[in-house]
Image 1 (cartoon, rainbow, N blue to C red):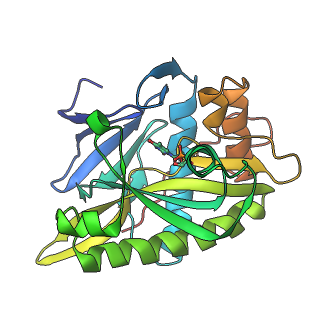
Image 2: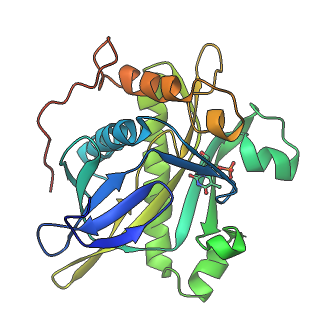
Length: 254
Ligand code: TMP
């Protein structure tokens, strides 16, 4: 890890300078945090699984025309990504009530929402990532109106697609968090999907038992965390039945 210049270290990932200008290497750690770093732990093998799961989902989304920062997997814990300017907004899409919406609005966990609900949170650890509206986002210049329109449209398409993808493998997509960035390509600026999509930032429930298969197992001390992440990867078809990671050559997209 010391070979390259470190650009940024987050709670679950590290970004290093990439091999070419405009690229970065995204390294997935086993570290887990919850409640804005108040709870800390390690989930053995999580980084390896999230690297694979996020790669798989980003490639499937690329297939339906969602632009992403993903270029290719480099090794078990690292992927090459395009360097983007992260928009300081976490976009949460919810299909079923759980977590903070259940607490805030008193909706019992597991209640199907009347329609998918999109929420925005301002990425600012010191402020505990407060919920904000589109008004705040445009007024304070975190994103321009056409950018937030793009972000909303992409988030809803991603939700529709991922609901189907997960339901096909017996998993309910309860909610998830996305981040987007500005990709500067010659004269052009485009909004692309960034960060990761993994059981760290999704709620995934087994469709027949409602068993949690995501980071809530860590947040709520439910045990069998590694097993849950592995099971998600196995059902996605990116682990052989035995559970050992099946490391085929990396795939490239542009
Ligand atoms: P919430 O119910 O705690 O607001 O979380 C909604 C979804 O967003 C859930 O799938 C977990 C994810 N999430 C993150 O990825 N990062 C965060 O910092 C938070 C608060 C939630």
